[in-house]
Length: 117
Image (tube, rainbow, N blue to C red; front, side, top):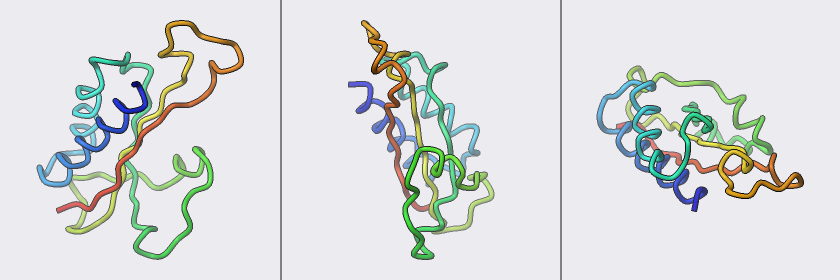
């Protein structure tokens, strides 16, 4: 359930941010609002990144750290048709009812990639 909430929150925020002329900060707040019914949003990390590497034929990032290393983007300054992504992650131990020591540090996540309008 949490994974679906993260994915849907990112997708809705990306759609809204692509067309609304919102700032990155406003889009992050929108994503948190989308997720708040199911997770403690203080435990969720939300990143808004430039995804132009897809246009350049770049390789997909191989790890969570590689995704996090992508350049940040300010959506209010984004060019028309510029790709960006919204990524949300949370530790499993922060959202589970019965945390288990062997899975508490597993990362749940969701993301959405779209073009700015």
